[in-house]
Image 1 (cartoon, rainbow, N blue to C red):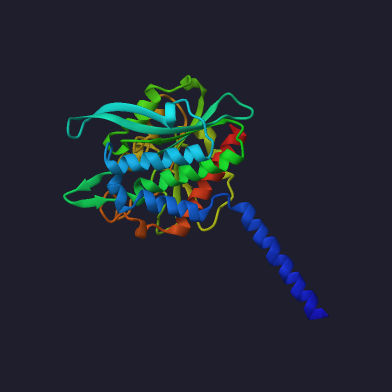
Image 2: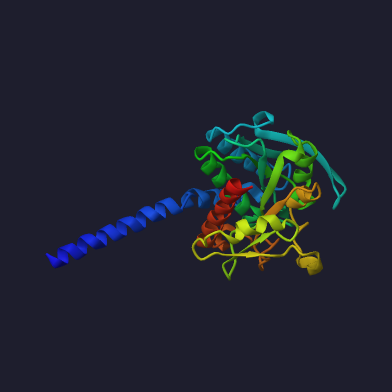
Length: 303
């Protein structure tokens, strides 16, 4: 009888642990990994703006937003734009941001979540797959759209998969320049760019130097898994290690919109053909995405 009682207690403990894990994890890891694998596959050939692979990525994101019953202020979720690439003086016509929207339950103000889906394409016959940069942020954005599609936020949330970041944040520039609401309604931009690998299990949240009121929310987050959330890389005195203008969040910062940028420090495969799906850390990536989602939820509650 004594051993039977211990066995029953063990089963109850395991059951509670499993229930807790189910509640704690809000992102479907298998779907997250499948999305980053597809977006960084050779089929998409590095997702350079206007390429066939980039258009396939657009289609994947657009179809996911549609399946989640998101709305959009743009026809078929798509904001088309044109730009001059300053690096090669080529005019790009018909680049596209894919934008979904979930109305908030209590507030007229917005949170804008961004992640660029483009990368470098094919260079000298080699595919630059851009798994970490930035299929990782894009797949995480899709996971967050799925979460909030069934857990309505207080603030409205815009999910913007932006194009042409690698050519000077062109998609983010276009979004801010032709924003469908007064920019004063945007309370926060959360940007994800490279969140799928770090040998020290460190994920940075950059932006609190310029937006100190956001710091207590991040400091109050409970750790998730093995990820260590660190603040920094946002002090101008850091020089090249200041990330304030390193990705799409810069365009919001220039409009005096508070931002938090989630990313990892550069690794040996940054902007190389070796930034492939095989080189991401799947456990770290899932935990990093869950950490960002916890932050979004906390900001939604406390802004």
